[in-house]
Length: 225
Image 1 (spheres, rainbow, N blue to C red):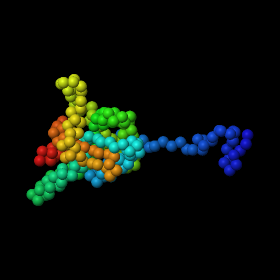
Image 2 (cartoon, helix red, strand yellow):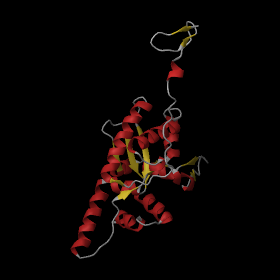
Image 3 (tube, rainbow, N blue to C red):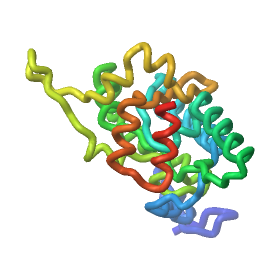
Image 4 (spheres, helix red, strand yellow):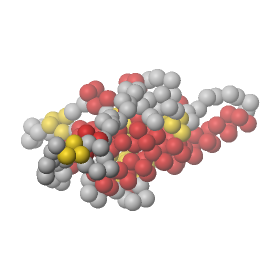
């Protein structure tokens, strides 16, 4: 048995590699299941821009769009953000201390509609690939795994077309209509590969009435202004 010069390991013959034995095993750190980092409007833009660069690689340059709902949409939408600023100034001028939403801990999106849309475009395993991109971004910014999630999908309604008896997603259908995409597209990445559209105001209010936690009353007021 010979010794490889300068390495000090046995040489077993041609075609036998020792490289794996010289490498330390490496595993990525486990992500916390829940994100506890408060995400400001500016941070959301940073995160989503980074996500779009990961998507560019994972989806080979194919653009994707997501239908979103929740607090992130309230922060990202320029007009709703401006309304919140004006409302805050109004209360300050009156000497009133009314709390307002300035952060969120996650971006809620509808995963099922994303998968269905990608399947119609011939993009395979889109759901798993998107979740991989979300996890890569979470690690990059030290966030919890659910910083972007579709946990609410299990509670969202489905409808059936009375003519064809085919089931469809009414929230997705309403959100992707031309008028809503024009008024409620809340994010387009600089590389044009990630677009996020908010659900319609009707559905946004309905979903917030169901949930109705700390910031939902204020969000509903802004949506109805």
